[in-house]
Length: 342
Image (cartoon, rainbow, N blue to C red; front, side):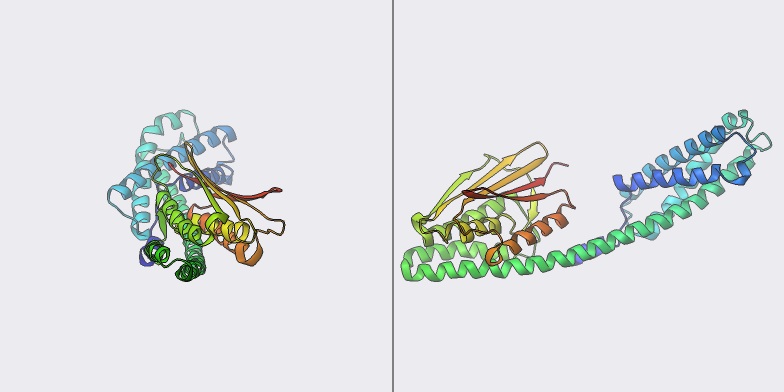
């Protein structure tokens, strides 16, 4: 998994909205520099500005779209190959565009002293220089993305390493207590624990929403055997789960916090509610637990776990997920919102 992620960092994907926006903004900025240059001072500013910015806009759009299609069709992702394709495509698009636009531009009187050959060669030369500047800018942009992703992956691995031992340690404690209380239930709990071990030690860094819910159910069964009547669990789940992926061990630690720091300290225990709502573009998971007077979501490491989960979600969903905590007089609620279907 890590090798695959590292390999992905050396690739370039032109078919991104962020790349399109940056290319268009850069083309307009370079076009404006050409317009205000001294060589164009003898012509009407509005005429030159309209012609240059219009040309830069459409040459950039067409070139980027063609480059995107070509790199995707040929499965080209290496920086050297991508930029070579960009240079060739921009030169060809500029050649065709300038050739067919020459009659309209020459009619304005701005280039009355140029032949079509001179105009095409000059246009191609300027576009190559502008493409070189754009390529340097894009290379710096993708390098910054690589550094951010590398740092995020390193921190994500560290956060996984923090959560998994904590999770397994608590499960083993539960089984150890059940051996003395009810050997038969302890045998059943070991079967559930084997599934929890597989999930916690899995090499993959993500799981489906349905897998996360099943993992949480197995954990609650272990706690239910240990806490008995003191723990009441209420589920509100959809009949079908969409194909939503999220970091491994996201929901279970949140439920574990609810049990360990909201239910277990109370003399009479309490109820934990897990509700999953499926929207058009968002999946919302709400975890609610009863609290006692001395409850604090940040006590005994609970806050660290919530913070880690929040950071993992931000890395995984690139800032589009949200994890919010709410405390009222009688309950503590965690609301997890993640995108899907984009």
